[in-house]
Image (cartoon, rainbow, N blue to C red; front, side, top):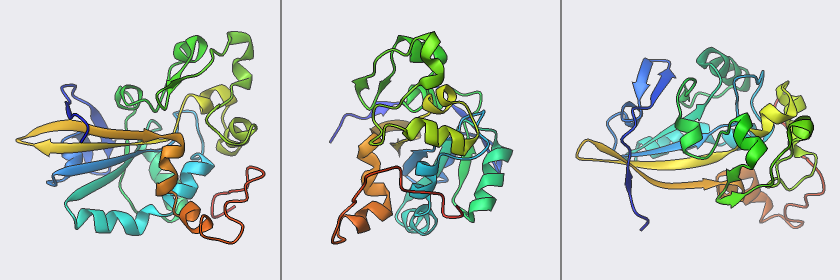
Length: 220
């Protein structure tokens, strides 16, 4: 029931099929769901949290496609890096690179160093500015564990500030009369329902029982 916002900018993506527009990602379907996967240009591996969430995408994307809904993961890392990591993880869902595009920035999932210094607005909330002197200790306030940024950065083989400038999210789009509309976005804990492990843990006797950064990539 949220207002639909028409997309006028010509976003371009690198895909296995070549250069593509946002409309192309629909693949002839009327709806499109995008997962903003934390994989910045300097990352050597994907965010471990996003990787845990993505373990549930393989089967789901097939059912979505059969229900007139296209699904893509989108990240800012080069396509070759993304596809190499996808092969390592044994996934097969479609993954596009938005490198050189404003897409992730415009939809609240990536931020510039200048935005980090002045204060990022993520998940519809303003975060405190990170002074240049403290940029290497950048934190992610939305994370439940205080060492989440440093642990994630180490796991992705990048620096903490670069890691923290990428954030997880999802965005929904609709195609109507040849025009693309943005219909919804969610971030941070709004993604918990997409993390299938959490939906199982919520029904386990001890629930999530989170006392530390407990999750890992499935091959770790």
